[in-house]
Every structure is written in structure tokens, then in C-alpha cells.
Image (cartoon, rainbow, N blue to C red; front, side, top):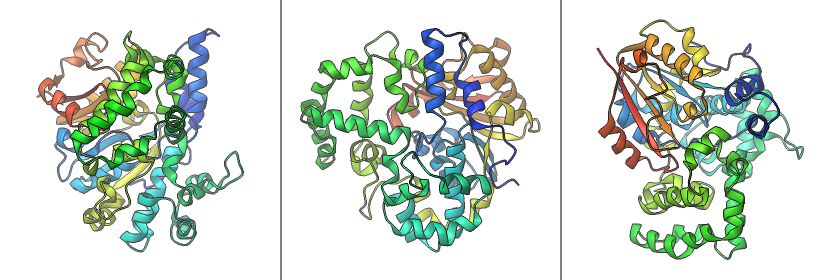
Length: 412
């Protein structure tokens, strides 16, 4: 089994350009797509923003299955190991995400105990993490991942040092959340204050009194009214249009933030802590992704060899796999980027490689599934859309930023 990023993978910039840029010429849309592709080359998601608990419930992950997923921040790929699959393959266009996935793999294997692991990826803000990286992790990293983490950012700091400075404040998403906090404070509101609310009723009261008025501010409406404003969320221009669906983006963002702030107790929702606190809660009882929970630590270490992290386009990767060899597919929101041709190419390979009873789970910025009317009917007929279960999973997703979570099951 491959256990490191492919050293001969095409340059990440070309992969991202191919996925994100579909408009030719020098018109406004083409320039926006190119700007997004450039922004997406670096670290985007220090933490993935899809709920792995909802994923595992919808996919009914079981022992012995083979899973192919998009990596993003790598949290979910590691979390799926808690379900005891035979193999998890995490693919990503972005070389920084591959390096992060490989960092987590090596850390789970070689850090001496759970306390070190939790400090590194849970707190992610201790100077000792850099020393731990050098002593325990670096000697076991593949060359490309090690070169990434020991390379320097625009300020001349080694990239690994983000784990001594609050890793979740960095990357495109971390910077976006930081800017949102700055704008809120500029208008007299500190987003962290809501974390003191005691229960969902108090959370809603705080949200309605303190946060709702922000979305009527002229500056907020002006800034969110341009597709480039959401690059920090990893949302390309095509996905911006689907998310807006003809409405004010400020109104859409307010609705999504309302679910995050009001639908789940903060003690059970680490996504809310990331949004409002810019990191995980540090108490022993903190809500954490499954891979970071102490009760899963020993199993994670035992199974980490079943995870491979590869820089590749999902369609290209599946073309190289045997027929009926994959049990579960997780596409995150990648299809929102795709043209009809790209979508059909992807599902041709999914349908070819899907084992009997295989399941596919993905998310969309808008509420409906994007497949009807775009996917060839011959492909669509091979899959059963679980509409009721999809609605349940959408409601259960604690990250709250997507309009829909969608589940398809391979027909016999």
C-alpha cells in the first residue's frame, strides 16, 4: 500500500487550475476563476469543515470496507479509521493538504503518547510542538511533505511553526475567520462572547441580539456582495453563484451562521468553537473530531497504516482502480466546481469502481442535489437517491455551512 504522497504527482497548481478554471478568455468570470485557483494553491483548510459523525452515519461505515475521500484538512480521513475500514485513500489537488494529511499520519504513528498528539493537533499552539516535530515526526515524513513544513512562509517563518502559534488561525480559512472577527469587533461585537452562552436557548438569544444586526451593516453587505469575498471559505466563483441562488449573500451567510450558532450545544460542536473561538476548546471535556478523541487514540495508531494520502484529481485516481473495488466515496463539495463534462467523467468512474451496495456522500452549497438534469440518465439510473436520509444528514451536520448533504446508493 502507498503510504505517502506520490512523488511524481503533477504540480498542484496545474491540478487546481484544471479543476477551478473552466472559462476561457480574459472576461470577469475567467479572471475570478484564475484568482481563486491561485489563492487555493496554499493551505486552505487547517481543519476540514464536513462533519465526520454525519458522514459515518450516512455511509454506514463498517469493518473491512474500502473508502475513497477527498482529503482537505485530513481530519475526516483519520476519523474514518475509527470505524475499522480495510483502507482509506485520501486524494487532494492541493499539495499543502497532502502535506497536512501526511503530517497527521506520521504524528499518529511516531509521537510518544496521546498527550503529545492532543497538544499538537488539538491545542496546536505550543512551542514544544516544533521540538516534537523535529524529534519524532520529521525523520518519518516523505520528502515532499517535509519540504513543505520546513519551507518558509511569506514572512520567513517555517510553516511548521503554525503549530506553535495556533494552527487554526492560519490557512485561507483561518485568515477568513480572523477577518470576520475583525469586522465584528469593528462594529462593537466580539464573536467569542457567544461561547459563554449556557445552552441552545442562550445561544439563540445572543445570536439574535448581537450577530443578526451585523448582517444589515452596509460594510458587511458590500464586502459579501462579491464572489472574491468568499475565497477564504474555499468557495470558487461558480459555487458562489449556487450558494447565493439569486439572494443577498449576507442573508445566506446569516442563515448558515444561525444553524451553527443555535442548533447544537457548543459543548458538542467543535465547529462552533473553530468559528467563534478560532480553535478547539482546551478543557478535558472538549468537543473534538473523532481522530483527536482519547478513546480512539489506540485504535487510530493501530490502523494508521491503512491510510494513504495522494495528490491527484479524484477522477484520474479512480481511472487507475479496479472495477467494483470501492465501497464508499466522499466527494465533499467538489462537484459544485465542476462542469457537466467533469461531473459525468467523475460519475462514470465512480459507477465503474463501485462495489455492490456502494454509497456516495457529497455536499452542495445550494439545497438540492446537483445531479438531476446534469448527469447522464444512464449513470443516474444506476444510483438510488436517499432523499429522506439526505435531509436527516443535512440537519445533523454540525458544520452548518452547506445547503445540502446528499446520499446515493448503488442499485443492484
